Length: 319
Image (cartoon, rainbow, N blue to C red):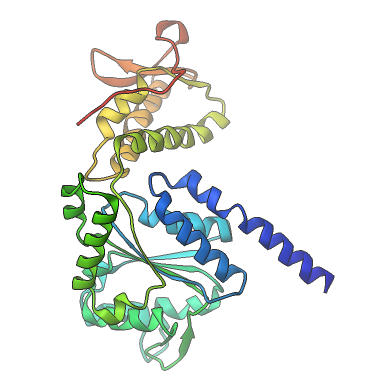
């Protein structure tokens, strides 16, 4: 009994930090992190079954990343802790065979889930799926049990389920001068028009993610740039950042319509190219990363050849 109490206290202590963890990893969406955290905590403490979430909003604003972040916090980086499906692949009835298997021994993708224990099922862009898949999704959401083609039942009720959708995302971007409440009401109204009522009503939490503003994307860029450089620096590479690097990456990556993904691509492309060229030229991965004004590209240089490092936030506005 003492061991059970100790295990429960450890879980409670761990769950207390869930909301702080999500805030460190998901930027610009504080209004959704509270409901998500509370629903997860209730489920993890055994007060209710794992939640069914519908995340609405434009591309690249953190919908998928939120699902990945809370799963990573709960289950660590274990393989298979989150299973992701692109719903655009399930437009035809034949595509369901990949999920449900057949009558001659293939158990399908869903057939292996019962062996994994508690996981997160992530269905991206559900509005692109066909009707047959949505009929199957109804069973996944509630009661959480499906039947494979072989007739074998599979219980998915212990899985968190997250569905994402870009419904009304273009309209959301066009209504940028409206209040957050107005934007949320508009997206929810459009989602109810597009999704069948029996599907829409089976979600425990339906949350609208907002477009990422300039300051939020700068914050994301700072964090992701450090995360990108961390394993490189852990080797034998001593890399400093010039004051010109951040504005350069923002200029090449900021796009309010596409969210954070172009920012992440800018880091991989421009920073990665500069480091690779330095190593190919015989460099040792040590020096300062800065902008070459002649080529408008990032380059590695020695500390004394560059401008002072970045020491305070940059205030630059781009359209």
